[in-house]
Amino acid sequence: MEWISLIGYVAACLTTLSFLPQAIKVISTRNTQGISLLMYGMFVVGVLMWLIYGVLIENLAVSLANLLTLLFALPILIIKYQNR
Image 1: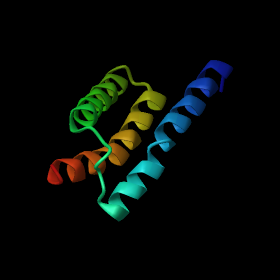
Image 2: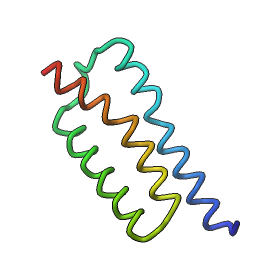
Image 3: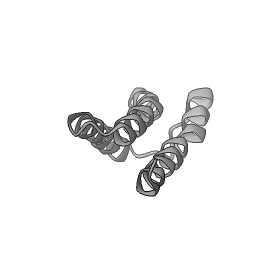
Image 4: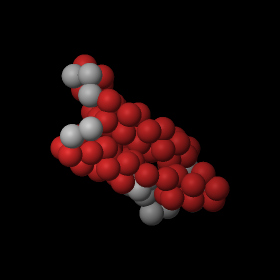
């Protein structure tokens, strides 16, 4: 693996895993008071678009990172929507 790809994979891991603590907290407490519904909605749509882009250009790092981020962010958005 070349070093440029390694940078991409490390960046993908870090940015994706950064959502895990928030997802765990929101799912366990159901508290979304400090989270903006508009921001999370825009974020989830953006992540979905990055996922589609990654699939279309056949880039595993982009695709996998955004798939996992979507899986972590979508439950937060759903809970936030339910709590509005």
